[in-house]
Length: 511
Ligand SMILES: Nc1ncnc2c1ncn2[C@@H]1O[C@H](COP(=O)(O)OP(=O)(O)OP(=O)(O)O)[C@@H](O)[C@H]1O
Ligand SMILES: [Mg+2]
Image 1 (cartoon, rainbow, N blue to C red):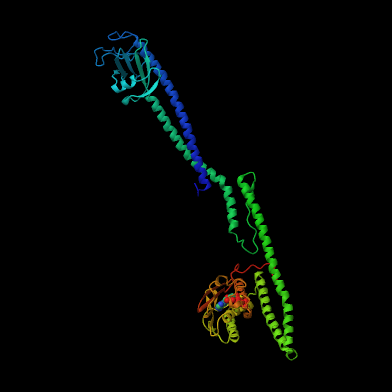
Image 2 (image 1 turned 45 degrees about the vertical axis):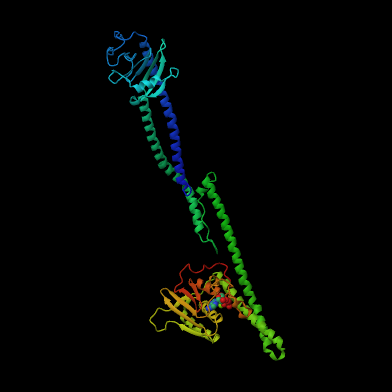
């Protein structure tokens, strides 16, 4: 029964119970019926036996018919020879048999349906003769005559007389009773399945409602961010006096706790994000001072010893690196907070052209190519609604990666094209590619390749995380494929951002 629904199990159990009960009741009542029928038959048998014994004591063969008999007189020279005693007596039922043994001579007969006395087969005589006078009424099988109740007695003169009456009626009655019993049981089982099924379904409905609430909550997005209020089990299904009510109210308590925990998680996430944003923001001013003083020392080149100049040069470089890191962290914190983006038309082709020009200057040893639709082409524009400053950063970060993480001489192609409702930006290079174990985590914060980890590279590992966050905030997607010789980042931005794709602005946005 594993894997069965509760409903099916209950219905099958109820049906099985009906079968067992009907079987037990049927057995008991059949035995009782048969017992009482056999008792009555035994009374008849005893009466028949008395009559036979009475006849035994009367004079026999050739005697005149008695007053009591309606039967034709026994013909002493008939085929049966000596007439069997007691069969010709009034009141003997059709089918009654007798066997009498007097002085070793066996006389036997049976009353047939016409009231005539017929001979008994040898086998029947043998069966009846074998009966014990002390045993009382006994059930015997008399071959084609069927089942009989028979009683053996001894006459006053010590002779054995056996009388039998047919038990066929008893058997027939019991059989038809059993048939009725069986039909009633089948009807009972059918009723149990139909009515029981309907009742069980009705009784399980509250449980289904509780289960559907649980399923509803399970399907809700609870993994991150601010979680909308979760559904509860309706009050009718939370009555603690019922089993289902106990489950329902326990589930509701659980959901209360879950909701409280999710609220607390969101609050602490918000706090951390706020802290990062505040800290980054606060770090900008002292960093600017450090940079300023370092620059000041550099200007006083002639008055400062050389080694101090070198040290101050390092201070300036590191403070610039730290400024970039702080700016990146601040930007990510703001994107996390879902601050409203600017929504202005931005032509990605123009942005790409600018970015490639800048990359050319920054990396003169690389080969830079731009592939955008010509302005006079009769093609849909590559304009999206978005935040120009941040989209520019997407391009700058991708091109910077193609410059920094590839050797000189690498060819980099930036292309922009329109694809239905999307503008697709692709940055492809033929450099050595990204380590495969890095690819699945590429858009996570602080993911860097081994080379980028060296302090001199100036990498922070935030570049692609920012790209991903900006693209996500515009309702777009980013995908990467990388092998030796082909590394390609594909950014898809919807021309008009789909509502709901954007991150919901939250109250903790920090300027
Ligand atoms: N075009 C590329 N070719 C080879 N490796 C790349 C390429 N782009 C990115 N990577 C690998 O992915 C890592 C993560 O890139 P990401 O831009 O996020 O960080 P970063 O460039 O190391 O640091 P940041 O951009 O913050 O200065 C890099 O460290 C580098 O190993
Ligand atoms: Mg980078």
